[in-house]
Amino acid sequence: MFEDRVEKGAKLLDEYDPDWFKKIDLDTLQLYNCVFCVLGQLFRKPHNVENNPYCEGLRILFNNDYGTDTNHESALNHGFICPSDNIYRHYLGISDLTKAWKEVILARRRQTPVEQKLELELV
Image (cartoon, rainbow, N blue to C red; front, side, top):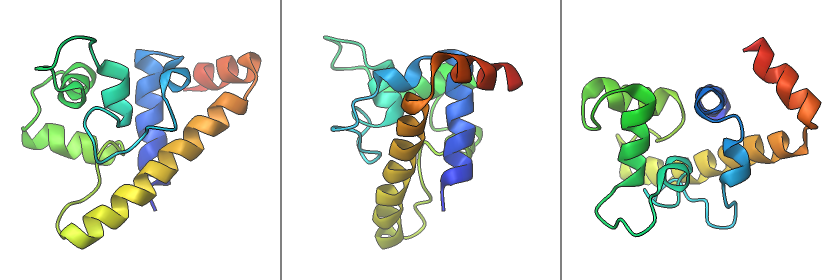
């Protein structure tokens, strides 16, 4: 359901940090939480409780402020959030989205360093 979007998001993260998937704690990964989502874990700054790491990640990756229509669309299209037109569907989607990110991360962790390098060169 979200595989294409998550793959697009993973490729964007590859450009930012080729080792991003090694930094994600799968035990705490939850896409409904701005601290424990993919961007939250990657852009969290220790001892800074005022920083929203999810928003910081979007700002850095998409070069604009969170809350703009283009930023929301970008986040949606890259699998960092799921559609929220219906609260029930939203929470079902969050579970599926979290699962899709875990699958991508685990697949990347299983690759050898040579395979990872080749995949990055093809992007």
